[in-house]
Image (cartoon, rainbow, N blue to C red):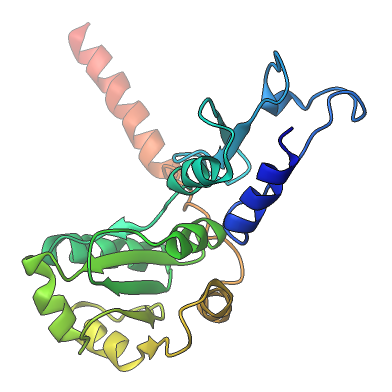
Length: 234
């Protein structure tokens, strides 16, 4: 009998992982995404694929450990997808800022006391994927201390830096961004953090920019060069 453990599991991971139940006798054919079901109870975890373009594409992971709520919750939370980018020094931070600028994304800067990624950040990085870019900047990396100093941060903090205006580049652009920094000063709960993200994230996901098509004149010029090359060989 799994029901009591299942209910306790739902309580332990509430807000982070959705728990669903499929009755193989009453609910009809099993959805194809779940794969083959050889016996019951069967427990599977579905999570967004890391390199997929959207969260709709899933990886399916079978659970084969103890049917205890504590074990199942550890399994589920440990396997939560994370799109948080770790910053380990100025070079990483520059790459992160360039990526945010390229796609016009707000930067969520999570200044952390260590390298451990909070479950809240894992969840939010998936929920707001391609609407914000999240960096975790751990204080334990000595290379990050200047970044803490640059933003006037001591200890754990969360800042959002809105996208810079077009044409703002270099040091002037960085100064303008720092002037527009917004600090999260609410209670560190999933509900409050989610509200903060909702307020500052883009309304819709950014799309990759299409590759520029070759200009007709350039194509014609290449064809002419090829023809001339053939004539000279003859």
